[in-house]
Image (cartoon, rainbow, N blue to C red):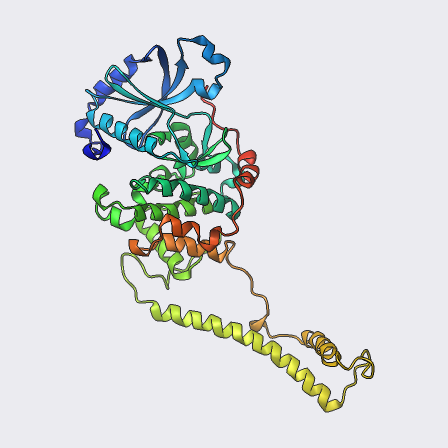
Length: 440
């Protein structure tokens, strides 16, 4: 049966027999995969489709497999759903696994294996060889305030490569920083998709302290979804590929600031409106003035104020250059009036370089003249992020889906022109991060 023939069923409390499912999961400790076995150890997380994920150990019938197998082949994560007790989870799990299998790409985190055991659909996933960027941020003190910008560019670029492969078939729908992994064996960044994505208990515990009293960061794909998705109550028919681009912009904010601390969705929308207006990201710790921001809920006509602000900045910049030119002209007029003679210059020998040396001398004299405080030459940089980064995020978070770029256009944005390699990301982030989660 093709994927199109099976409709994905959202989890519903009325369809789940919680007590029966829990009793069923407790009774099952061994799963048969032909001659081999998988032993369930403990519950370790939950997949986005609602099916439980367990820590498991692979027990082959032929013990000679251990001679050339790595620990990551033995200790795995196993996602399963029963056809009779959990029909909706069973269908969704099969669909997700099939979607993952058809996306063969370097930047897609693939499932290891899929099998059927006594009416249960079982999907084997990587466990110890991957580490999510969200866990690195939450568990490493030096990254609590976010990654360096050049490392963010690497992570987003590799994610866009994987997302472009996903968009050939369908939308991702659940793109978050928790779904962006660094593969410790392949030393590359991969995007979890379909059957390879699940929320881990340890990662949720690591991020719980920083999100206490705020909207949970592990469900940001729900409360931080694109307007066309959120307004339709997360109807799958309204979810398009451009909705993933919105979530990519939200992920960029999480990587930049180390989290998203908002008490309600309206606060997030105001913050996004400020970014759209200023075309930049606010500095870490900067007090944001929302007075000129066009609120998402109440439309404020701020076009004239923003236009005047741009004109003011342009005039101020022109004034600085004009004052410098006036200083040079003032010195030239002063020299001509007093018939000032330059001692360092030999007029008879170097006639060709006369004015070149004179101008250089005059500029040095002009720089000695004090400049008023309002028109000092160098401005203090308010933003610790580059303009290209802010413009890229504002482009991803455009309210109109048609104004958001696709993956091809986005990866060719100026922000990614000088992005570094994954090896640089490995050296700066992964090797300085806390040791990865080892479940066994």
